[in-house]
Structure formats: structure tokens, C-alpha cells
Length: 202
Image 1 (tube, one colour):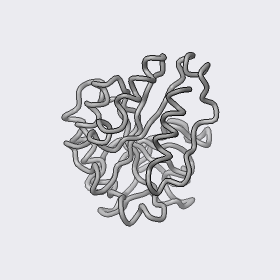
Image 2 (tube, rainbow, N blue to C red):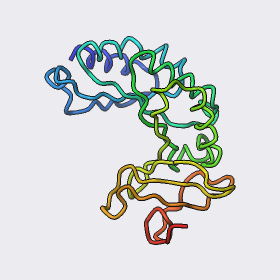
Image 3 (cartoon, rainbow, N blue to C red):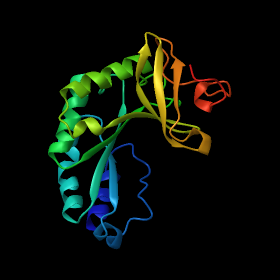
């Protein structure tokens, strides 16, 4: 529990931070039992400054440490930056898990969202520069009906998606193709959208 208390104390000193939410199922017993631990980093420089020592502490007590990062315009929206982060994670014993497409929430969609078509280009460019283990990372989005992996482009304006996790049994593992506009940053959340399964796969 020393790690959790120390982390909470350090986060509490950050200016502008009004609340800290720690997982309620983490305990010394859980850590010894090799619980998985996830953390968010957006670039390699941030990881160097904040997290390497913390990761080492977790791994020393048997934790499996994975990383999830958001794709953010003006922060890490470049293949070189993402590749550097993913390779750096592997070098420090962290498993890259997800690169997330930003959700269209207030304060994000007009500032940090990257268009889907550009996003997959960035991720694929980064993969070319990643070592073998880092390439296991998935580019995904947290959609109302489940976690959808963004697989790639099928044509100039069509992209291929796959349910990695699904709210409904009928969507489990389902692959679909969606027409995507040049500046579109999210799938339409309507009942006629392919992601909802009511439109025929194209």
C-alpha cells in the first residue's frame, strides 16, 4: 500500500487537481496476488518524468503493468511520438494495451480529437517503427455498444472496425465497414449506424 499512498500524496500536490479516484479493489493482498495495473501516459517524455520508478515498484511486487493512452491532437498525434512511447514502455516492462480515439465530450472534441482517417494513418506509421512486442497495441474507441477496435482503411473513405468487447452478444467479434468523412472524429451514435448492427455490412 506504500505505493498507493505515495502516489495519492504526489497527485494531491498537483495544482488544479480537486479529486483523486483510486481503485477500491486494490489492496496489499491484491498486489501480491499479481493484479493487473493500468496507467495512462501520452508521450515518452511524460513517462520519463512521472512513471518509471512507480512502474518498477509495481513490477517488483508481481504486478502486470499495461498502458492505455489517448490519441491527442497537438500532444502525440505523430507516428514518431507514438512509436517512441510504445517502444519506451516495452523497454521498461510495460505492455502497450490501447491507443484510444478521444470521445466527443465537452472540452475535448473541439480541442484534442484527431479525425479517424488521420488517426489510423498515425497509428500505422507508428507501428512501422515499433519493435515486435509493442505492435500488439490496439487502436480503439469506447463506444456506447462496446469497445471497438479500429482496424484500418478499406478504401479512400471507408474504414474497417471490429468489436473487441460488446454490450450485446450479437456484436461480439463483429467486423463492419463504415463510410467515414475526412474530418469525422467519431462514429455516429444513431440506430442506423453500422456500429449498432442495424445496417448491413458493406
